[in-house]
Length: 404
Image (cartoon, rainbow, N blue to C red; front, side):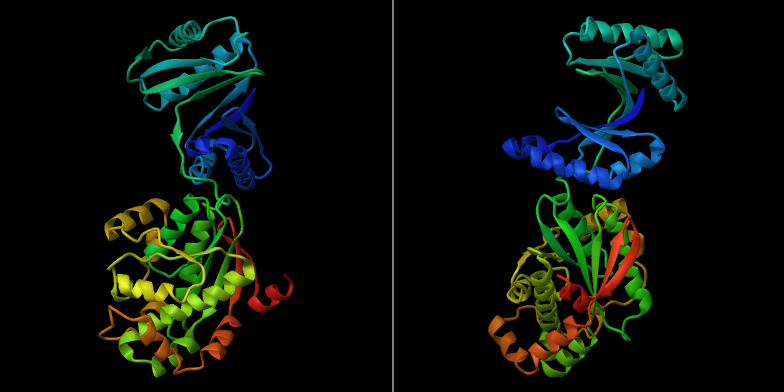
């Protein structure tokens, strides 16, 4: 008998001839998350075999792997009826101890050489469960729990109930994106949604010392660490940019009313350099229409003009309340609301322009040495490698780029 997790997917099943590619990526992400465990594909199912790790820890990790529609904790045994009966009774007693009183048995006889038909076998196992625990009763319509028996070609899977997963697509099937990660509520949620659509993300953050503190940077690093738990066991790179020189130069050179949009455009130009160097196809942002002055349609259009990559805004039409709700669900909210300044709140003009024009912005950008300033800013980048919520190493942008 083996302890197993029976994993089911949803959207992946609609991928036709490409389904195997998505399945293999999901299998790889599960293996990365549960290092050392055996993972295999079984006709529309993925099976994780485990031994040492407790099931509660497995459930927590499994819920964060995108591509999994639902899963069940169970056992894999042979076709011996006595063994199947014992496992069914044990699972029933486990659920009874948790306060559940009614049950049903569902049997799927995929292996037609098994001598007892599905409905008959369900009835037989139901009788055995009732005999072992008379306090339980059968409810075929709305049971407190059910026992699933899946009789396959080489053995039998027995499990109880289905636990909802994160759904979506496996991280890594949709290419690589660079997330603009601030210290606020929105950007971590935007990154979560990008990962749910299969985008493998890394993060870029702009800090402005001494106007922003080390605590502010550590806060954003903590947000990135939380996101690693949804990354399919993959490393997440965190690009830390010193934005002070650029912000001060822009603030001194351009009209105050448009300085905020010019700063955002400059950030996009820094992102261009990182994307070109490390092959990111998109920039991901947490902006939502009308949320602040820089996020009007006109200003978003002006900011996009400075980016050579696709800009993805998962939250573009979200209400703030919806974003806050999800941030609590994924575990980023409490970190996001810590009271540390970030570069987005430094040098904010009293009356920011809400309808900028690209031609006017480009004229203003000629008032400072943009190419030199861009080079200096990119050269400040420090890169942290995060895995499973921990910093595993760091280096400079220049050093890593030299070794490519």
